[in-house]
Image 1: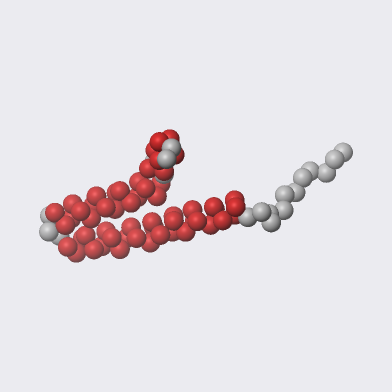
Image 2: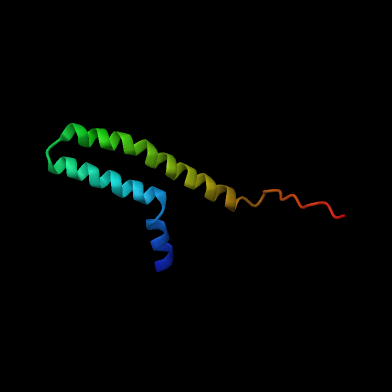
Length: 75
């Protein structure tokens, strides 16, 4: 495990959203405001899911060896 890679992963948009959503949800549970905790979870879940889906698709495109690269025409 590379410490630099772990630090970069924790600083990405997805992880910041996960930590924010978890923090707000846990704070609402601490205040015993269950409706706002459920609302927070419901609002952050699609956003986090979208980021994981986009991240998975970008890795799939990078690993695809059948990708055609177009080079400029020689002059």
